[in-house]
Length: 280
Image 1 (cartoon, rainbow, N blue to C red):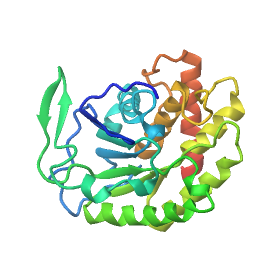
Image 2 (cartoon, helix red, strand yellow):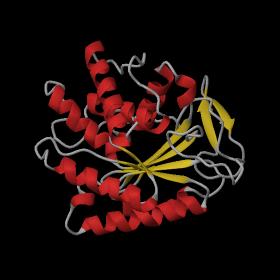
Image 3 (cartoon, rainbow, N blue to C red):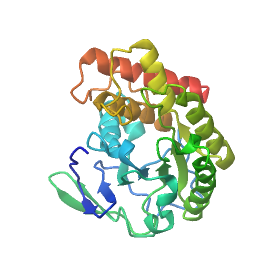
């Protein structure tokens, strides 16, 4: 397991590694937002405060939420994707491992953020997030037994989130490097979960497949053939920016240290994949 650089706090428990970290950025908190405010991804009123809930697919490479923030800030239309975020992940977790009711309690997670020179900023009291990004374990949505759990908890968590005034979203994950046939099953499962719960789906898994088809020389995986390499996390972040805020990541000044041509390719694949998936 790689090391993690965190901005807020980390709790190490056996056998679970639970990570919760506050993102940077100066976007306003969701606290105090009128109940009638409709927050929907890729609309005129997209998320400005997101809670990431998942597992190691999110926390690899110093956390997906941080990379998304940097990708957004480096984009030409950065103001449109301005937001703050918190990542809460459990190693090996399925969607049913998470207690969303507790996570979304008022004035709990996200009550304060670290900004500037490690300055503590207290966010407005009350509801701290306007959206929650959910994912399941890497094979759970297509597992013969656990797929039922995936759909069950996709619904449960969606109901819980909306009861707190928070909009659910789903992160479509990718096939294993040595099992490309997983792509369709995962895409179908996440798309159906999105349909059943009227929730936005980020097509990262389809972006992985598209990138591999065009540039198989760019390795999106670490040696275990499951977790994302730096390029894999970068592609996922670019897909999130394109999908959630409808902001084109192509040309983003943030490259995560990748070669310019590699970053450009991944940015382009993310944009093209989301345009196709969402019918834009």
